[in-house]
Image 1 (cartoon, rainbow, N blue to C red):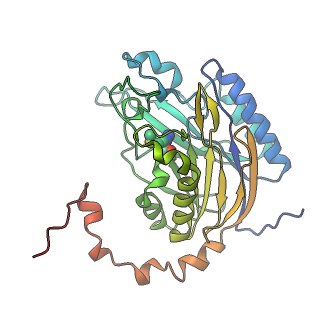
Image 2: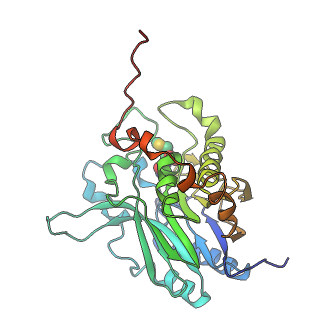
Length: 321
Ligand code: CDT
């Protein structure tokens, strides 16, 4: 197959990972990621996207009363000694990548160390060109011992204060979001209003949704629904990348996919394990939507959208009469 390329094309690989168990060390995960990078190189990729919290098991499924006991799941430098081989190999291959990981920052001016669910974008020379801190933190902050497993992201991570950025990279306008962010239309629109042409999103999505198990069977549908809608309504490519399969007894969604600005899925993972899917993404395709049906400048009405930024929860409409 000949890969179509214009100067406005990114050949992107969604590098889905299968489960990372608690006993899997960073070196073994990085080795799996390097295998995927090499496959991506042989398939002509410019950019490879790895999932959320790619380097470790999805540790918010456990509640540790002493949070410092979780410190070993966080990165204190990037690259660090264990991730340097990934950066070295990507640079050698001339491939950029995006990576999700737990970040524990150095002490800031207030004497605080911050814990973020972080995603970075690394260019083809191995330089970190953008960093994003997950905005929408799902789950709970307290131990809920009656659950079959925890989703204590709100205990382990604070929400990113910076919001959604868009960066000039890979010849286009690239943004990032992480997992639960993909369910919120505001995430896409914030980036759409900065002209985004490709959104990179890693995720860990347990099939079993404890607060409402009736949603379990719909996990795949909802995953595609939100990313296809976000792509179409903002005229952007979306690359959604899972850490799937049964991790520490918790079954997680695969179905990584690459979505065109039309909202159509152009590539989708077939397994829940380590798997690379590739698509050649013509960024000029975005203009067909951005310049027509979703011409924001022409058609948006921000003066009647004021509730979106002034109000948090719903204020129910009063009774008639
Ligand atoms: N990692 C992450 O954000 N996962 C959530 C699970 C549902 S909320 C408990 C998601 O939105 O996929």
